[in-house]
Length: 319
Image (cartoon, rainbow, N blue to C red; front, side, top):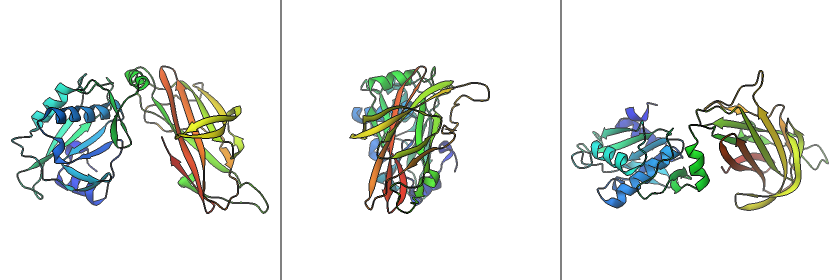
């Protein structure tokens, strides 16, 4: 697909036809979102700054959504009233510091409503973040929304140009594995639990410390190059308390080992981190969590659930 700043009416229609859902990097706004009132100007500053403070993304002003799915192109704007220049002025004047690299595309509605337009705003992830909205609050993208940042997140974002920004995701083969049990065995044959690390910063990670928090109901058959640190600890994962076993890995760049570069996916379990899952006739979920530390970066946390149903296991990331 074309870059957002090159989109035309047919590209927006394609997003609607294919049901491209809103995400951390895509937001649909009905036409009422752009109005010449102080409240709407503040809302624009909030939404645009949230993207710049996060991973960047696209806001489409002029598409009606329902349950985060695009439904149709709205009535559009009068280009003599809501102009590209007015939108640029609102963004530049209501957000501190100014965000570099924003592109606004005015799209003519030649088929849907001739004479009217909608706007696509492409916002890069900012190297000069954090950016403050007009109400003196710093925002980020989270669960399809623009939400206030915690104090530590503001500090972490301010270090974006000087420190790595790592994130981790658990994964299993094909996101779904059929469990296999030997006769009379209480646990499944081992399955590989992998993890990938990405770096959103231009600063490479020369080393990091990662902890795995594994639901103690699971049997860890092989912990790869991790070291067990603690058994039967209590960990809150997605607002629930779980007893977990804790595993640690220290990563340091040395001969033959590369840093974690920006946008390069790095798998960290060699050999495989293997687990076995208890036999049960019930649908059940098991908790996984992680934490990451690196020089200059605030500690990051996240988690996932292993969901088991009819001996089929899937992994559900909860951020």
